[in-house]
Length: 258
Ligand SMILES: Nc1ncnc2c1ncn2[C@@H]1O[C@H](COP(=O)(O)OP(=O)(O)O)[C@@H](O)[C@H]1O
Ligand SMILES: [Mg+2]
Image (cartoon, rainbow, N blue to C red; front, side):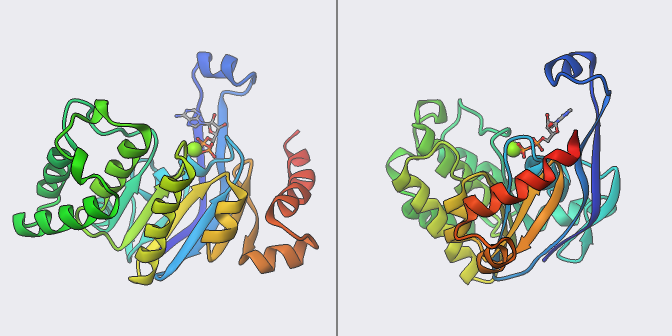
């Protein structure tokens, strides 16, 4: 279970960032008063365009960033006061943290397994299962830098699951993957959900949210502008697909920023 309670995250921008982001303000409200609940046996999708605040929100859940305001509870533990306990419960995947390119998938899997104090036999069992599922086995002894984008991503996913976490936090898990590999990944997320795990992902891909997520939170400029099942969001916006729903909401909410 993940409970986000009125999360706000404000970044202090450097001069360089102010120029890059074409702003005169030195504070960026990346996440603005966001609340949500993701439950066991459910895939929650944070859907939003680039810069909406998805990665920031997920990094806060994963204890890598501290909320400016609000708090987050993961499996009953506070992400700031009990960050160690939260870290044991979560598997986190992001585009920004890459596996060390010098090492092999097998080595990284075993390394993170030991870091999480997983027993050696269990590490081997899980490696065999996950590597076989993601078809990494034939590449497991190659250097990560030699692997294709898809294979690297699948290796990262396998490594993030070495300790069999009950809460899965995946930031754009299918980003840059071909459709076959992407399907392999989303099918695995469904398996995790069926095992009763709490899964939260971010995505900017409408069809992925439509097909995969039990609950969708649409986030624009750091704020949640709609939330519910696909059907609920479509009914509320009077639209026939998520892309239309998104643009309806975008028309209304993107103006507020200016
Ligand atoms: N470390 C940071 N310092 C300053 N601004 C940041 C930082 N990380 C992200 N931002 C800004 O916060 C906003 C939200 O970013 P992010 O959470 O990465 O969005 P998303 O993942 O939805 O694309 C963007 O405007 C981005 O430029
Ligand atoms: Mg992001």
